[in-house]
Length: 284
Image (cartoon, rainbow, N blue to C red; front, side, top):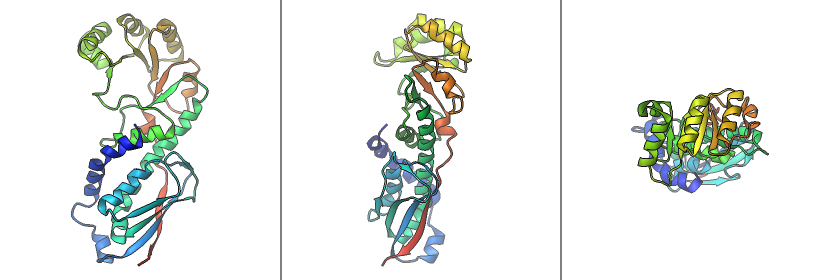
């Protein structure tokens, strides 16, 4: 997920977000600013972190009015500090006021995810383990949230259900066994798709290895169980650890040498980064 890919698909979601906030008109803005006046407003960071979503922030305003100009002092992925000036937005004051909340909602959310991801990713530096996100994203925000994970130094797991085979507990129950589920996936899915199996105990790990799974997820296992699972797998499949992984406990996981660690917390538990639009001035 890179910025170009994200922005190509972003418009429909941004439009929905704007329609959610302005279903007929911005009554407050139209009351105090009934006619065009040109102005500018400053984007100020109020908390240390990693910035992400600047292109989305800009697109909110240019969707309302293509004449709006945004001049950035930073780029996605930069470290930012409390009090730092990030950008100047210039255009029709009515557009600046009406688009403010939606633009900031995206920027604060995406920057918060990038910041949290960056903190976790730093804990993996020097290890063989790759940090992954999950599908535990906010509805209609996935493309933005997964992009923010990449900006923060993480990597993307499958984007959606069409993107890869991940046989979870309920799929396995439906198929009758790990073996049956893997065989069915191999028969149905294109050969270029890797097959991942979620396992909850060592018996399932053994069955997944014997069935020829490409990736074996060790879900909610103890450290000792994961160590034994890795011994059983013995390089015959990639290993992924998942289940309540946070920056507070990730060091125990990486010491085992798993290939991947996936964490839903990157997207569902990251706090926003505090950013504001301040000091609106009339310039014409």
